Amino acid sequence: MSKVGCQGCRDGAPLPFAFTMAFQPILDVDREKVWGYEALVRGEDGQGAGWVLGQVDEANRYKFDQACRVKAIELAGALFPDAETKLSINFMPNAVYEPAACIRATLEAAHRVGFARRQIMFEFTENERITDVGHLQRIIAEYRKQGFLTALDDFGAGYAGLNLLASFQPDLIKLDMDLIRGIAASPARQTIVAGVTAMARDLGVTVLAEGVETEAELLVLRAAGIRLFQGYLFARPELARLPAVHRLDAGDPTEASPPRAA
Image 1 (cartoon, rainbow, N blue to C red):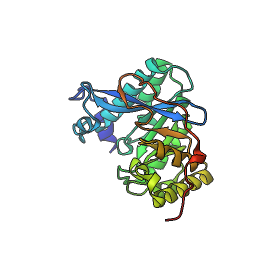
Image 2: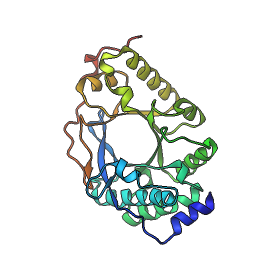
Image 3: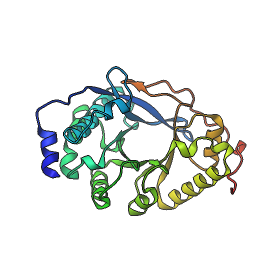
């Protein structure tokens, strides 16, 4: 695997497709400010992530993963307003053959644009099957050693969210939008989210709710104790620029009904 990884990154041939990043804000509603932005891969003409990822194969997977990190950091270095704003980057654990070696391009890009390591968060999704949990543990340990934040994305929708959380505790977990959709009218979803939030609090892990689209969803999630949010209610991703945020206030969480047993 390491030989394939090294060759995939060092091969001078460019990727056979072009891409850029769209940015979507993550809001801290307690502080009423933008906490950070997630970099989302897009085609240069606005094609969705599916179009880009559909062109990634075994031959270019390593180079693509590295190029995504560098592109996100270079764009963020020019766009972000202050040194506290976080940049969230998705990465492929199965495209990291050796954590310390594969982080070098990221470190070089951050240094080049003057982007602090503490501003960078790496997300991995539980929708990607993790074939070697020990390898992922080594990746997370190396990233933390380097001063980066880590996040488990799509929590509640993938292969083994609870097992991954038991194996190691990232800085954040991002609740999957399918778990959030319709939560205001679903006692079962309310109970699950309340339980996950309490469990994360005991583990010292911050919960972020993604895919929030309605005021009702926001109020219920606020009542569960969540303070970090991402979704169309606040802003849609915009290509290679920071979108305007529709609102920073979170309403009154006491207006929402408390989570109820199903």
